[in-house]
Amino acid sequence: MILPYWILLSVVLIVTMYITMMISSYKKQISNMSAMMIAMTVSMISSLYLGTILGVIGQNRMLEPTIMAIVYGMIIGYLLGKPFTILAILDGVMAGVMGGMMGAMLGVMVLNQSPFWVLLLLGIIFLFIMLLLYHWVKQKAAEQHSISEKYTWIFFLSLLLYMISFLVFSAESRTQLINWCRIPNSITNQVKEPEVKVEAKNGHQDIRIQVQATGYIPNQIKVKAGIPIHIHFINPDPQNCASHIIMEDFGIKQFLKKGETVIKLPAQSKGTYSFHCEMNMFFGKIIVEP
Image (cartoon, rainbow, N blue to C red; front, side):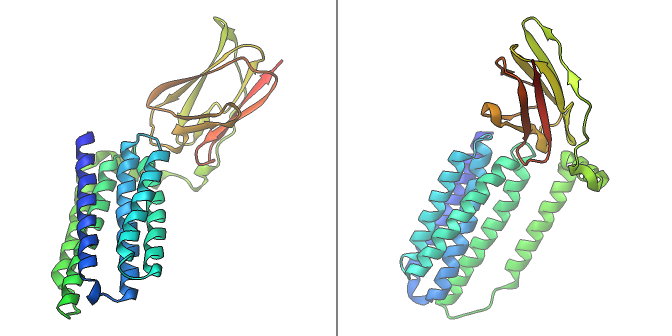
C-alpha cells in the first residue's frame, strides 16, 4: 500500500506550494502580522501531515522521517516569510521544526494501529485550513472580511462523516474503545511476577516471555552465566506499548511483531540486565547467576 501514501505526499506538496506562491503574489494586501500567522500555520500543518505520512512509510524508522519533515517545514516557513519580515521567517521556520518532529513521531506511533484513519483525519484538517487560507486571501484582495458559512459546514460535516465512518468500518478500533473502558486505573503498575529459572538445552538457554498490555510475563528470569541466551517474545497484539522493547545493556531497540520474535544474546557474565518498553512503563530483568 505504498502508492496511496505517495499520492498523499503529492497532494501535500502541490497544495502547499500553490498556497505559498499565492501568498507571495498577494503580499501587498497582507500585513506583516498576518504574514507571521500564515507562515506559522502553513509550515506547521504541512510539516505535521508530511511527517506523519513519512513516519508511516518509514516502518518504525523515526530518524529519516523526522529530518525530512523538519527540513520541509523549515523550507516552507522560509518561503512564506521571505516576502515579508525576518520575524515571519522565524515564525515559519520554528513552526516547521515543531510540526515535523510531531508528525514523524505520530506516524511511527500509529503505524500498527490503522494509520489510514489518522492520515484521513489530518488530511481533512490540512485541506480545510488551506481552503480557509485561500478564501481569506481572496477576500483580502477584494477588501472583504467575512468567511462564508458554507466553509464551516464543509468542515464540520467532513468531521462528522469521518467519525461515522471510523466507528462503522473500523471494527478493530471499536474493540479497542470497549477494552479501554474496562482498563483499571492501576494499569500502569505492572504486576511483579515470580522469578523463573531457565535450564540450558542444546547449548543455549531459551526464555519465553509473553508480551501483554499489562507488561512482560514473566518479567524476572534467572539464567546461568557463560551460556548463550535466546529470548522468545510472544506478542499477540503489536499495538500495545510493550511491543517496543529496549535493552540498553546490549544496545538493542526492537519492535516485537505479532507472533514470535527471537533475540539472541551471547553468553553473559554475572549481573542483572534490565529491559523496558519504549515509554518506560513496563520493565523486566534477566538475572545472570554464576
